[in-house]
Image (tube, rainbow, N blue to C red; front, side):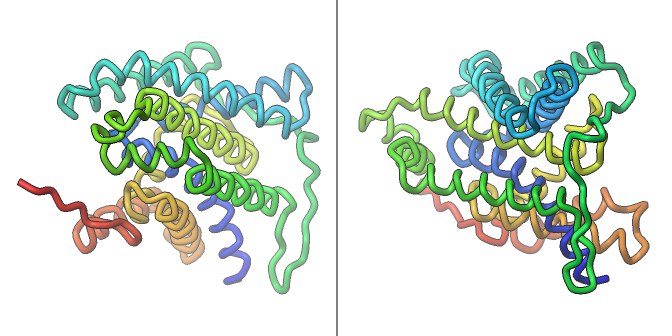
Length: 291
């Protein structure tokens, strides 16, 4: 029972981690909570569903194209909704983010309706594998594997590439990075693109896991991913990964012991406790400002 629920929690938490990475990267660079990020997750799921259902594409090809589409969408959102407000108050950017979120969810409702849409039955070969006392589906293993691969790829990009070095420099000091010749606008656009691609992958994986895609699926998933980012330490990429997995495991175990009615409340209870007891999160660092 323990092993079974642990695997279920890791599979769910891996998807939370993918979304949380988008929150934490954007916040780490421009200190903005992109509350439209959950809707990008939803758009990624719908794009993948359309590509598989109507164009009969392979699931991995559909996921790649969905991630590519959401990369472009993320860059457009940053350009239209956030760039002009970068020097404004944080409240202005927050209101803009909420506006983009409502626009995308309303557009999805107009196009696809309120009913949940399901992936075709043959989209993924489902088999049960016995691991000790637990039965694990090939879909769960694939979700964990794909999520781990994407997170490792992100870590490689941030730590080992030139654009990753520019991202880290911009997150340390926005103004100093610009003075050193870094194209800050390009770095921020790339960050939005990268986070949006991960959110799209998470959307498709969640849609496959629960076999349901709805216009409002991004709302709760986005809020839980935000809680995961805060739990791990907002601004910390390893923290977002850890926070997402811990949140998924905690939620699944909470349901397993009989608190299924409170599964959504678990994430926000953890968020409140973290903010009260350790505001920097598990792997976050205190930021000192000279005055």
